[in-house]
Amino acid sequence: MTNIILLGPPGAGKGTQARYLVESRRMVQLSTGDMLREAQTSGTEMGKKVAAIMAEGKLVTDQIVIGLIREKLQDTSHGGFIFDGFPRTLAQADALERLLREMHLKLDAVIEMQVDDDALVARITGRSTCGGCGEVYHDQTKPWPEDGKCANCGSTDVQRRADDNEDSLKTRLMEYYKKTSPLIGYYYAKGNLQRLDGLASIEEVRKSMAWIMGE
Image 1 (cartoon, rainbow, N blue to C red):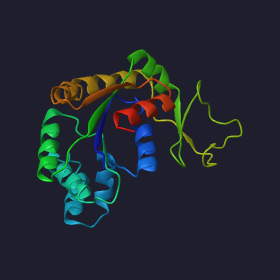
Image 2 (tube, rainbow, N blue to C red):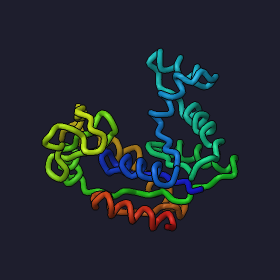
Image 3 (tube, helix red, strand yellow):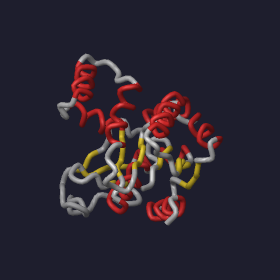
């Protein structure tokens, strides 16, 4: 079992690589947003608490998110966990470390997907995804098929995020650097941090990640 954290700004490719690890290594992707949506309909005590908080338009506390992660970590019938989007702050990193220690688990690697901001803007503003399977396309490097159908699943539902524009992306990048980039120093000091080129091809990033994970 391998447990990793993926770090990187919006558009660095964390989701693409996480999907591959889920499919190829039977790892479990722990995305905060997905966990909260799942909890709302789970019917568990924790889920009811999450649903009530979100219904009131309030922010879910770190303590509750850690509680949801605790529930997920109790399942060992897979190849490990991918933390994607959590932790985002030093306080969350400390809380996660305490939880893993309590459950006799450990992080095997914290993988920072490094990018050049200008190149990242060009990548994101041309990005689209398939609404059917999540396959990622790009206007220049991998355009949507001419027949209008996703090459992976055949869906005709092509989607673009409303905030995939230059101004919005720069705002999101600034938010990332302000809140999340301190984690890079945090995990470097702990000896967990590994870096790779997030703007390399999907296959090159995949190979780098496999090497980091000991394949």
